[in-house]
View 1 (cartoon, rainbow, N blue to C red):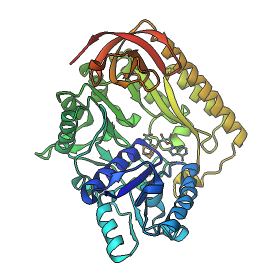
View 2 (view 1 turned 135 degrees about the horizontal axis):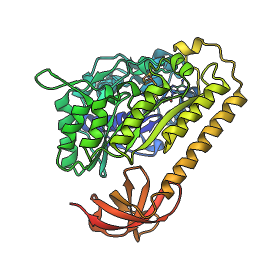
View 3 (view 1 turned 60 degrees about the vertical axis):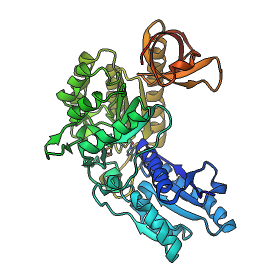
View 4 (view 1 turned 30 degrees about the horizontal axis):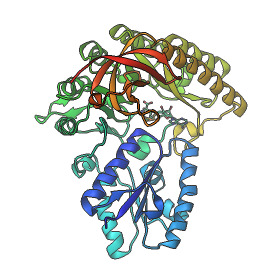
Length: 445
Ligand code: SAH
Ligand code: F3S
């Protein structure tokens, strides 16, 4: 019987991607299959996140549960990967000696070897080095289910925002070669994938090499991906405002396959805070790009990350953030209270804003943006939306579910021939803040 691997993923989409690659890898090397029941797993892997303190705390409480499983079945192998592993290294085994393997985001491709070494020599392994982009050279072709897939196009981050651990845990920016990215997407399209999401900490900082050694920019990469047969929709995340240049904005006029949604994190609307965060741009720089983008693609939906309560954030700084939100008119956001991360420059800054003020500001910001989400969903009534139809609804077998470009879920009357296809749907009912219903008028091969 095949051995089983259980993978718990914490944190971002990069980690989701890495986890599925770990499963592909162990499937290929050890014939392992992924299970969603840790009780029956031979190998337990935790892909961790250290972006905020809360995420990091979860690691050891969860490991405590896995320890009990190992007490019952001592042959179980436990591995910890991801950003906490990268940051803590050996310390993980000091706090949890029953952990057998510790690996970073850049060494997950060595998992099969680590596992063999563990099993043959009974030694525990810690490997959290940054061997450039070697990782991708050792990963098997990705397996996919469904019509959407993630494609990692670059790793790491060299921006060093003062609050953020990513450059330390994932290393500096490295782009995947152009040919590799294209080959992976062609392969995905041949398996029926219709929508790709390009992944990286700063995808618009992409500087991959063509096989002749010339540099390919992100805007150029998008054009080549748009030429791939079968791919009908392109998303990407995350991009940084600094490199959201005119070429990229122009891509929104040239490439209809680029969705009308951009996630462009601004973090704060206050110039004082942006400078202290080392974001290297002002609120006005950001707004200028947004204005241009809205001209290039008038129906663009925008989203952002916000950090509330950065050290010394004043009421006025917060008002500046709310004013920026009002001008951009965001569709949604991912907003959190600042969390002090060891080793980052911001962790040295005195913080004299009260917890109460931070919570109140966060609640105000979230309420404001939620109103936008609701308004924009309601505005879909009577419009025609291009929908990627994915499956029959679990809740109601008479309906199919798909997704609109603006990430809303769309229900439409059941027609199995539409699965995996794009359809133009007229919206005639608003079901909830994120779900609408309609009927298709045209569908495409
Ligand atoms: N590459 C992205 C961000 C990646 S981290 C960018 O260009 O901004 C994802 C989000 O986590 C960040 O946008 C930020 O809002 C949040 N984040 C990072 N460090 C944080 C911290 N110390 N406290 C709170 N939120 C943080
Ligand atoms: Fe973090 Fe800033 Fe990079 S938020 S991931 S250091 S762009």
